[in-house]
Image (cartoon, rainbow, N blue to C red; front, side, top):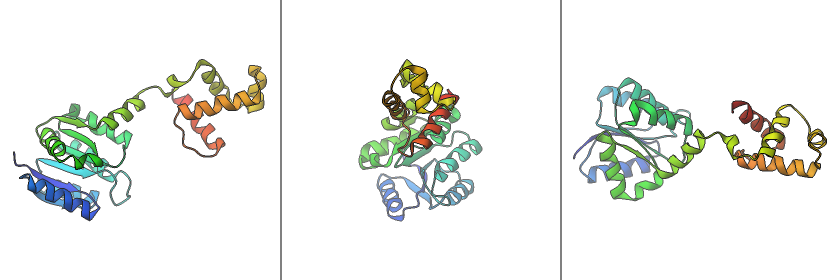
Length: 215
């Protein structure tokens, strides 16, 4: 099956490698894009059978490629899109995978491209309206959909609730009739279970309280 494709990737060597690989398997690359704006323009100029796009692209070098893919799926329903990324951008990944019931969507980590036969099979599956999702993407999205507080023990939930009230560690220790060392251990466990970035404790306390309030 020969497909008309648009490849969007700001790294020139990787883009040329993808284009060469796709052409070797009989596909026609009708346009190449090095940034999100060029991708939008190329698709609007001539709708392809499928888009292959990176997540992190100019102009902001954040998730511009993925946001462009979501926008194009809204503009051209069921436009097949295969996203390649070095990481999982979870909020837009969910929006992309939820669009049109997930038909004609793929989200793979870039390392999977080296498994050439699997990669080309994914291209054809997405173009035919199927869904292809990297196992690591599924793992991270499942974690996102879960209530993060479910990972906490009842005692840790109690501690976090008191932290949300603005209490100091000394106040927590007095309230719970435990040592400050035990409070520090509980708070460290909370930070770890909520996957909070290593930063100052004050910053992580704020993030932990936000997680508590969202839940």
